[in-house]
Image: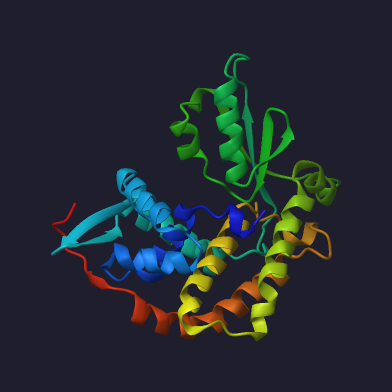
Length: 276
């Protein structure tokens, strides 16, 4: 689901930082964040607690200037945001470049390891895998799972292979059996329903920044859940391309006003390297 209610303040804040701070070597005043987030429907207390949590998790750093507190990126958050930027603008929502390679991951865990099994399945799903059989999962392309597996301490219980399907294999049918295509399609369709009207409308000047923030956050939420299955093996009416066109058109429409709003609403200062 991609509606407003499912967007967490941390997701919005990361999107905001990726848009306004990433690559600029600046920090943003907490009051500016509170102001923009209020326009996006997030209360002051929720914004303040999100800033604090993200500092504690190593995703933000504080920088005091007089009586004001500013926030900047860390190496960790910069890496997360670069990945999101690449996912939106380079990788995209439609996989036309698939070379026929699959990544197969097999695992065998003791019956008592229910938590480890749950954690592994959750991380595999997030990485684009689907369950071919109960202990054998598959993802399109070459997926590096070494970090994922070592993080969970399961290297001794997991085997990974690269593979190609046999010539007689019905890949389309396998995809439909392995992934919840209707659920994924519904997310793209919901995104289009929520945003297509803005392809021909302009927001109020001061709301443009908050609206573009929501647009980016919702789009990233949708595509991060997409395993990027090869489009030639998906249904003919697959909605990802239409949704991506909506995203790009609305983004382009919002951007001039959002930039003007950022100039008016945001207090930014240069990041000082001595600040932890």
